[in-house]
Length: 170
Image (cartoon, rainbow, N blue to C red; front, top):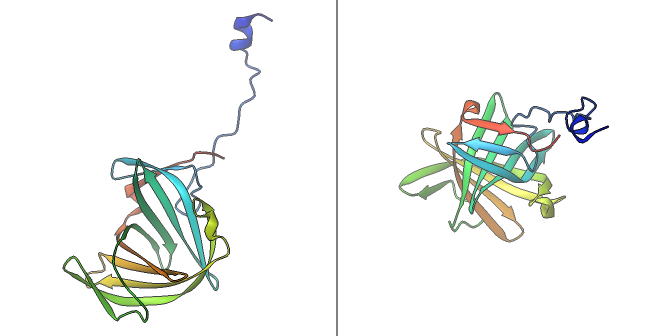
């Protein structure tokens, strides 16, 4: 068999195409496009509280990191979150003010963690969380207690049509 027949042979083994992804099946290594920016998924956190489950994906573009949150409550809820430096301590207050907006306590609880990628070190941890929303429910603040540290993120809701997911693997 000559060189050209090897190159153009129809006997090439074709690899299966990556499975189509949705916001609940995103994997580390996938690419998520949001607001005309391509982000690589470098971490995934699955939160479990009783029978309820939700996800946060760490998205990286250059040095810019954002978090995509996904949960199915009565309907699909998606949000983009950015960590902020904002001092909060326990017991959590009934409201928070940030950049001229007031956020009101919405819910709190604890969840067990499954971590993947850059979040793998969180595997098996338990996190205490609290959620706050503004009056219009157009913005939110999320608090997560990791040991003695309170991590604060500010976010806003997005619609599923605003993101595109490209599988990076099977």
